[in-house]
Length: 116
Image (tube, helix red, strand yellow):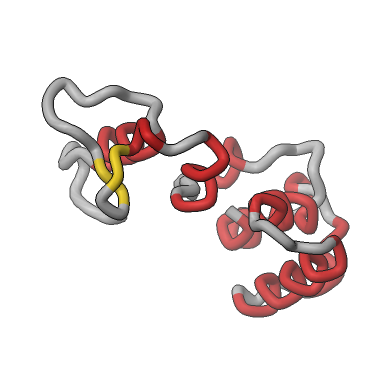
């Protein structure tokens, strides 16, 4: 989601994530009220990507673990399949394979943004 400052991107994201309740009307995703989804169902549909890579990455998690975390939500995903997908995703954004075991503090700002 992109837009000018103050246009409501953060408010819309909070509404979609169920963090904020609408003052009027209903927030719907795929025709269903957002509060009708269980937390795990909502996590499968909507995952935020934060703008600031310094505060959005857990300093105690490796890059590989950080990228794999949302993949664990996907039903039927094996550990091996997640590791392979992590490698594919890192390659797609131009991150070298050795960073899979790196921590955020060991990466440049640009690399952190690509992980985030």
